Length: 76
Image (tube, rainbow, N blue to C red):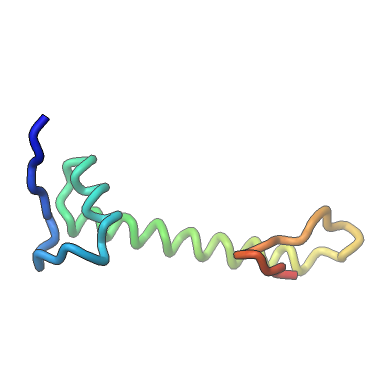
């Protein structure tokens, strides 16, 4: 198997968007479409996480089974 140079970044950047370039190459989608899709997915995840944290905080402590842990810090 030979190495094939592939860089779909519209600016030709080679750092900072490795995940976008990898997904773009694996799926055959252009860089812009891939970037938009990953951005939307990340935004939706952040909204879900905020909702879950607020829901968790609204439940009385006696009813909670365990605290939500984010990056080693409790969100309680």
